[in-house]
Image (tube, rainbow, N blue to C red; front, side, top):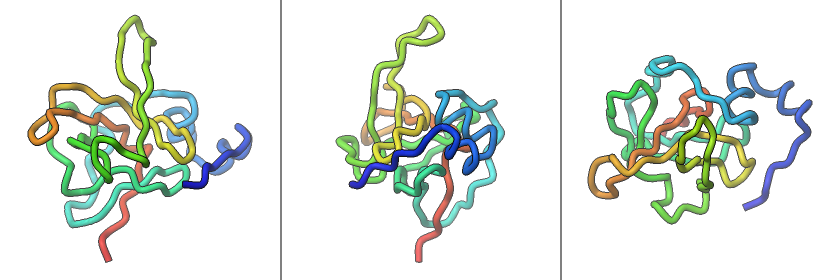
Length: 133
């Protein structure tokens, strides 16, 4: 996968202020602000670079107010989605990022449904939806 590398000024010009805050500065959007994604078949892609990150069929309702998925588009050992340790806010969490542009997507927690038991809690502002077909 080819990496996407841009200057901070380029990212600021291409992304909305909220998307820039989340994707480039590791921010978190307010819960419940992105419930309007389509329900049909398709793929969620990174808003910054278009990298496919989650499939619609792995999405579930977690009750948290953020889009939630039980695995990345290509499975738990994903080439599209990476993880790193996040010790901000006096917590120990696992950050989820786009492997193509290093954009911050959200966090993953071990309290999701079968088959993985994982809950990828993703900022909706970091995603675009591409319908199948």
